[in-house]
Length: 145
View 1: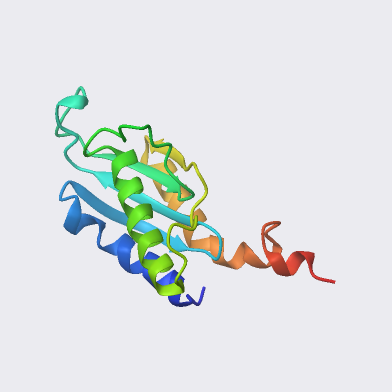
View 2: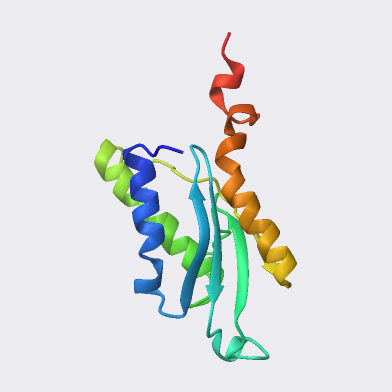
């Protein structure tokens, strides 16, 4: 996948997440033309988890976070993804001169990864995703005449 300017913004901001959320490590990820896939390791989930020092991984398809009026809890996956999406949207809109224009869809998909087998399968899916773009039903070139 060759990224355009907006894709590079997304990739740069994604890679910056651990600088803003020290309890986060990034695993496999890919920026696609109309979505984002990534695996996030949250290494210290604090008092909101039964086992605060246990490593938990989540994979996500980055479309958007379901933000409540008061926002997601601090240090949650929703806060991490919401921050990423907000920062990228502001930067892309500043570049395009389209202040406040929507960049991301409203929700995102998350999945707790519970085994090495699942982790490896999801990593492979992320790595293979760019090769699938030519046949993706969301690919605009699939609809051209």
